[in-house]
Length: 94
Length: 140
Image 1 (cartoon, each protein chain N blue to C red):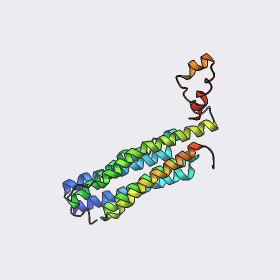
Image 2: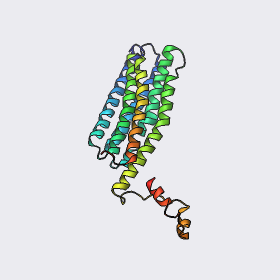
Image 3: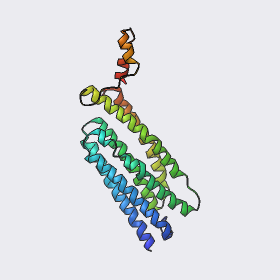
Image 4: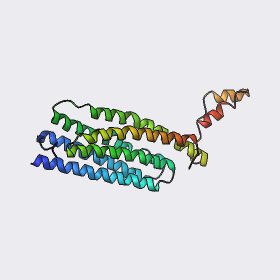
Protein backbone atom coordinates (compact mmCIF):
# COMPACT_ATOMS: atom_id res chain seq x y z
CA UNK A 1 0.00 0.00 0.00
CA UNK A 2 2.77 2.39 0.86
CA UNK A 3 4.55 1.50 -2.36
CA UNK A 4 1.48 2.41 -4.39
CA UNK A 5 1.15 5.70 -2.52
CA UNK A 6 4.82 6.56 -3.08
CA UNK A 7 4.69 5.84 -6.80
CA UNK A 8 1.34 7.60 -7.20
CA UNK A 9 2.58 10.81 -5.60
CA UNK A 10 5.91 10.69 -7.43
CA UNK A 11 4.09 10.36 -10.76
CA UNK A 12 1.62 13.10 -9.81
CA UNK A 13 4.44 15.44 -8.82
CA UNK A 14 6.24 14.67 -12.07
CA UNK A 15 3.09 15.41 -14.07
CA UNK A 16 2.53 18.70 -12.26
CA UNK A 17 6.15 19.82 -12.68
CA UNK A 18 6.18 18.90 -16.37
CA UNK A 19 2.86 20.65 -16.98
CA UNK A 20 4.22 23.78 -15.28
CA UNK A 21 7.39 23.55 -17.38
CA UNK A 22 5.23 23.37 -20.50
CA UNK A 23 3.36 26.48 -19.37
CA UNK A 24 6.66 28.36 -18.90
CA UNK A 25 7.81 27.33 -22.38
CA UNK A 26 4.47 28.50 -23.82
CA UNK A 27 4.96 31.84 -22.04
CA UNK A 28 8.36 32.16 -23.72
CA UNK A 29 6.74 31.40 -27.07
CA UNK A 30 4.28 34.25 -26.45
CA UNK A 31 6.73 36.90 -25.19
CA UNK A 32 9.85 35.81 -27.10
CA UNK A 33 11.37 39.01 -28.50
CA UNK A 34 12.60 37.44 -31.72
CA UNK A 35 11.88 34.42 -33.88
CA UNK A 36 14.81 32.33 -32.64
CA UNK A 37 13.53 32.61 -29.05
CA UNK A 38 10.20 31.21 -30.16
CA UNK A 39 11.80 28.34 -32.07
CA UNK A 40 13.93 27.47 -29.04
CA UNK A 41 10.83 27.54 -26.83
CA UNK A 42 8.98 25.24 -29.25
CA UNK A 43 11.94 22.85 -29.07
CA UNK A 44 11.81 22.86 -25.25
CA UNK A 45 8.03 22.48 -25.32
CA UNK A 46 8.00 19.31 -27.37
CA UNK A 47 10.62 17.71 -25.12
CA UNK A 48 8.43 18.55 -22.11
CA UNK A 49 5.35 17.16 -23.84
CA UNK A 50 7.20 13.95 -24.70
CA UNK A 51 8.26 13.45 -21.07
CA UNK A 52 4.73 14.20 -19.88
CA UNK A 53 3.38 11.51 -22.21
CA UNK A 54 5.87 8.97 -20.89
CA UNK A 55 5.04 9.74 -17.25
CA UNK A 56 1.30 9.60 -17.96
CA UNK A 57 1.67 6.26 -19.72
CA UNK A 58 3.62 4.91 -16.75
CA UNK A 59 0.98 6.15 -14.32
CA UNK A 60 -1.99 4.82 -16.27
CA UNK A 61 -0.30 1.56 -17.18
CA UNK A 62 -0.98 1.71 -20.92
CA UNK A 63 1.80 1.33 -23.52
CA UNK A 64 0.03 3.53 -26.08
CA UNK A 65 1.37 6.81 -24.77
CA UNK A 66 4.82 5.53 -25.50
CA UNK A 67 4.30 5.36 -29.27
CA UNK A 68 2.92 8.91 -29.16
CA UNK A 69 6.06 10.04 -27.33
CA UNK A 70 8.25 8.45 -30.01
CA UNK A 71 6.32 10.23 -32.78
CA UNK A 72 6.52 13.56 -30.91
CA UNK A 73 10.27 13.17 -30.54
CA UNK A 74 10.88 12.51 -34.22
CA UNK A 75 8.45 15.11 -35.61
CA UNK A 76 9.61 17.78 -33.17
CA UNK A 77 13.23 17.37 -34.24
CA UNK A 78 12.34 17.64 -37.93
CA UNK A 79 10.17 20.71 -37.29
CA UNK A 80 12.79 22.53 -35.25
CA UNK A 81 15.57 21.88 -37.75
CA UNK A 82 13.31 23.04 -40.59
CA UNK A 83 12.52 26.28 -38.75
CA UNK A 84 16.18 26.82 -37.91
CA UNK A 85 17.24 26.34 -41.52
CA UNK A 86 14.50 28.74 -42.57
CA UNK A 87 15.86 31.39 -40.19
CA UNK A 88 19.35 30.72 -41.52
CA UNK A 89 18.29 31.45 -45.08
CA UNK A 90 17.36 35.06 -44.28
CA UNK A 91 14.38 37.25 -43.80
CA UNK A 92 11.96 35.77 -46.28
CA UNK A 93 8.92 36.15 -44.04
CA UNK A 94 9.20 37.74 -40.60
CA UNK B 1 -1.98 2.66 -11.43
CA UNK B 2 -2.18 -0.88 -12.72
CA UNK B 3 1.45 -0.90 -13.82
CA UNK B 4 2.84 0.38 -10.55
CA UNK B 5 0.71 -1.53 -8.05
CA UNK B 6 2.70 -4.75 -8.00
CA UNK B 7 6.18 -3.33 -7.61
CA UNK B 8 8.25 -4.10 -4.51
CA UNK B 9 9.55 -1.26 -2.38
CA UNK B 10 13.22 -1.69 -3.22
CA UNK B 11 12.35 -1.14 -6.89
CA UNK B 12 9.68 1.49 -6.34
CA UNK B 13 12.07 3.75 -4.44
CA UNK B 14 14.57 4.35 -7.29
CA UNK B 15 11.72 4.63 -9.82
CA UNK B 16 10.01 7.33 -7.77
CA UNK B 17 13.32 9.11 -7.16
CA UNK B 18 14.20 9.07 -10.88
CA UNK B 19 10.77 10.43 -11.83
CA UNK B 20 11.02 13.27 -9.30
CA UNK B 21 14.60 14.15 -10.33
CA UNK B 22 13.78 14.14 -14.04
CA UNK B 23 10.66 16.26 -13.66
CA UNK B 24 12.43 18.74 -11.38
CA UNK B 25 15.36 19.15 -13.78
CA UNK B 26 13.03 19.68 -16.73
CA UNK B 27 11.08 22.27 -14.76
CA UNK B 28 14.28 24.11 -13.81
CA UNK B 29 15.31 24.14 -17.47
CA UNK B 30 11.99 25.70 -18.48
CA UNK B 31 12.34 28.25 -15.67
CA UNK B 32 15.77 29.18 -16.98
CA UNK B 33 14.34 29.47 -20.49
CA UNK B 34 11.87 32.03 -19.15
CA UNK B 35 14.13 33.99 -16.81
CA UNK B 36 17.51 34.35 -18.54
CA UNK B 37 18.03 37.60 -20.37
CA UNK B 38 19.75 37.11 -23.75
CA UNK B 39 19.14 34.42 -26.36
CA UNK B 40 22.69 33.10 -26.04
CA UNK B 41 22.10 32.46 -22.33
CA UNK B 42 18.66 31.02 -22.91
CA UNK B 43 19.85 28.46 -25.46
CA UNK B 44 21.64 26.58 -22.67
CA UNK B 45 18.71 26.24 -20.30
CA UNK B 46 16.51 23.56 -21.98
CA UNK B 47 19.46 21.21 -22.30
CA UNK B 48 18.91 20.48 -18.61
CA UNK B 49 15.67 18.80 -19.66
CA UNK B 50 17.10 17.09 -22.71
CA UNK B 51 20.08 15.58 -20.90
CA UNK B 52 19.24 14.30 -17.42
CA UNK B 53 15.54 15.16 -17.39
CA UNK B 54 14.93 12.85 -20.33
CA UNK B 55 17.46 10.28 -19.11
CA UNK B 56 15.99 10.00 -15.60
CA UNK B 57 12.37 9.69 -16.72
CA UNK B 58 13.26 7.20 -19.46
CA UNK B 59 15.29 5.19 -16.94
CA UNK B 60 12.30 5.09 -14.56
CA UNK B 61 10.05 3.97 -17.42
CA UNK B 62 12.63 1.37 -18.47
CA UNK B 63 12.87 -0.10 -14.95
CA UNK B 64 9.13 -0.21 -14.29
CA UNK B 65 8.07 -1.62 -17.67
CA UNK B 66 10.96 -4.06 -17.67
CA UNK B 67 10.01 -5.36 -14.25
CA UNK B 68 6.33 -5.55 -15.15
CA UNK B 69 6.82 -7.49 -18.38
CA UNK B 70 9.77 -9.48 -17.01
CA UNK B 71 12.11 -8.76 -19.90
CA UNK B 72 14.52 -6.12 -21.11
CA UNK B 73 12.75 -3.21 -22.82
CA UNK B 74 14.64 -1.41 -25.57
CA UNK B 75 12.08 1.19 -26.73
CA UNK B 76 13.17 3.75 -24.16
CA UNK B 77 16.76 3.42 -25.27
CA UNK B 78 15.67 4.30 -28.81
CA UNK B 79 14.03 7.53 -27.61
CA UNK B 80 16.99 8.38 -25.36
CA UNK B 81 19.50 7.76 -28.15
CA UNK B 82 17.45 9.85 -30.56
CA UNK B 83 17.15 12.79 -28.17
CA UNK B 84 20.86 12.56 -27.38
CA UNK B 85 21.74 12.67 -31.09
CA UNK B 86 19.28 15.36 -32.22
CA UNK B 87 19.62 17.98 -29.46
CA UNK B 88 23.15 19.19 -30.43
CA UNK B 89 22.13 19.33 -34.09
CA UNK B 90 19.09 21.45 -33.25
CA UNK B 91 21.00 23.83 -31.02
CA UNK B 92 23.83 24.26 -33.56
CA UNK B 93 21.36 25.17 -36.31
CA UNK B 94 19.49 27.55 -34.00
CA UNK B 95 22.68 29.19 -32.75
CA UNK B 96 23.98 29.71 -36.28
CA UNK B 97 20.63 31.19 -37.33
CA UNK B 98 20.54 33.55 -34.34
CA UNK B 99 24.13 34.67 -34.96
CA UNK B 100 23.38 35.39 -38.62
CA UNK B 101 20.23 37.34 -37.79
CA UNK B 102 22.03 39.38 -35.14
CA UNK B 103 24.89 40.15 -37.55
CA UNK B 104 22.44 41.23 -40.22
CA UNK B 105 20.52 43.53 -37.90
CA UNK B 106 23.20 45.00 -35.62
CA UNK B 107 26.80 43.96 -36.43
CA UNK B 108 28.20 45.60 -33.30
CA UNK B 109 26.21 43.50 -30.86
CA UNK B 110 27.90 40.18 -31.64
CA UNK B 111 31.53 39.26 -32.45
CA UNK B 112 32.49 39.48 -36.13
CA UNK B 113 33.11 36.34 -38.20
CA UNK B 114 36.45 34.65 -37.71
CA UNK B 115 38.66 35.20 -40.75
CA UNK B 116 40.21 32.17 -42.38
CA UNK B 117 43.93 31.50 -41.69
CA UNK B 118 44.67 31.53 -45.41
CA UNK B 119 43.10 34.94 -45.98
CA UNK B 120 45.82 37.31 -44.58
CA UNK B 121 48.73 36.05 -46.78
CA UNK B 122 46.54 36.24 -49.86
CA UNK B 123 45.52 39.78 -48.93
CA UNK B 124 49.17 40.74 -48.35
CA UNK B 125 50.05 39.53 -51.81
CA UNK B 126 47.35 41.65 -53.32
CA UNK B 127 46.43 38.84 -55.67
CA UNK B 128 43.13 38.40 -57.41
CA UNK B 129 41.56 35.69 -55.23
CA UNK B 130 42.15 37.69 -52.02
CA UNK B 131 38.67 39.26 -51.71
CA UNK B 132 37.02 35.99 -52.51
CA UNK B 133 37.38 34.09 -49.18
CA UNK B 134 36.18 37.07 -47.14
CA UNK B 135 32.59 37.21 -48.47
CA UNK B 136 32.44 33.44 -48.19
CA UNK B 137 33.43 33.62 -44.53
CA UNK B 138 31.03 36.48 -43.89
CA UNK B 139 28.19 34.65 -45.56
CA UNK B 140 28.82 31.58 -43.42
